[in-house]
Image (tube, rainbow, N blue to C red):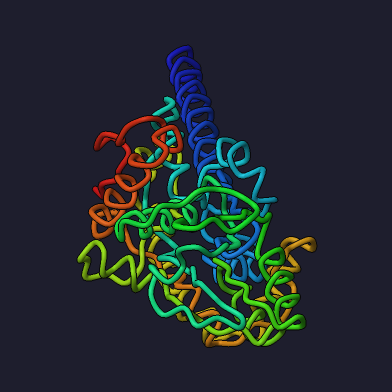
Length: 342
């Protein structure tokens, strides 16, 4: 009888140990399953790179472990990016954050340039024809600004910031956003005067319609000619992630990149829904009106993994170093920035 009780007690203990172990395993599995990642993107054209993902999350409640895609004011992206697992950011900001010690990885370029020089009542044919003229421009101290300045410098054209035209130079007058360029073009159309502006899609298409503007230069094509790259355009916005997420969950990182590679086709094929998707995600979005398939295709929102885009990215960073090194943290980032799929 004593032997029976001893065996029963041992069996009970074993059962308890197994039950407790199973409970911890179940809790661990549940934690893994409920782990969710977040993504942020700045309002404006860069947010277009996440439209298909936003739509998927909205319909299904998540995309795998990605539970939230948030759009924020463009001025807030530097801070918001540090609090998210994934972030779409201006191309120079990724290098800047990394050089300042942030543990991030650059996964891909997501916008390959969407800048155009438009004119009203203008006979400009070449960049050198801009000499002696005033050009309104978006993006002071950011990628659009650096690209335009690099192209001017490559042609040996002197330039400066100002409010009035100067003989022998291009004078750049900065405005807050595309609407600022638009207002100058519209006013010039009414007065019969010349106006020239650097503007991004989708605002450029509005300028064609509202101001009767004409396209003087496609900066993506000029950049391709300047660099000799086989790729049209340049990295304007990129996708970054926390380094520890890349290290611990490469399977999800690959799944996310695969999903986002579909976005370029998605926004063109579903052009009538794009603004609706963005407004639902961020009611204050500047992209709150319908955009045509042609306009969206000119936004160049095509994801290119960094393994294929690194040379183009470094070329763009080198152009920034020549103008304002502080914009990327003072130096080219080392290879630790770039994500390498396992």
